[in-house]
Image 1 (cartoon, one colour):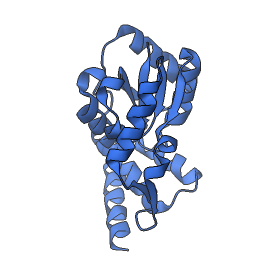
Image 2 (image 1 turned 90 degrees about the vertical axis):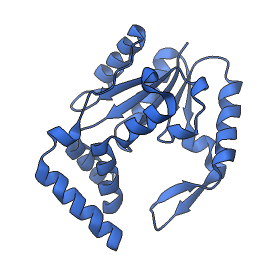
Image 3 (image 1 turned 135 degrees about the vertical axis):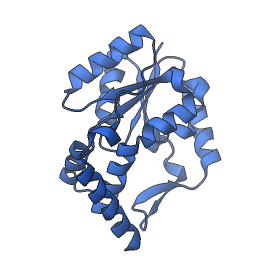
Length: 194
């Protein structure tokens, strides 16, 4: 049985990979943001949706996942809202930060949101949140950099078959150009002071 969460920084390919995994496993695809829409409110200052009632959001998720008596794939960044007992594996997608920046720019994201999300990828905030929620023994970290959907999905399916967690695949702080990181830091400071 596959009860999977696919997570990562916005722009790393969660939805594409989750959709393909749901097709392969014949599993229901759950887009968590759609499920918890009644608890979301747009914050124009933060340029993002905020959850107005986490308890209600958790209840909506619990009710929906408990009603599915087969496999499901959850597409989300909000892994902290999911009861760990309802998940077999959490797939954390990672993408080299300069590539992520180019992808988010191409999508027309506001510049400060781009900087915020690229910094989140650099420090591995999605991986940390996944570990804190599900524990290291349920995590498969995947570097998607320069890989096509087919090879990423094959890697995930192979690792799920092996049944061993994988953490520590990437460390962007040691591989990304220092000047790029310094510039990001300056940019986030500019965004905060605006």
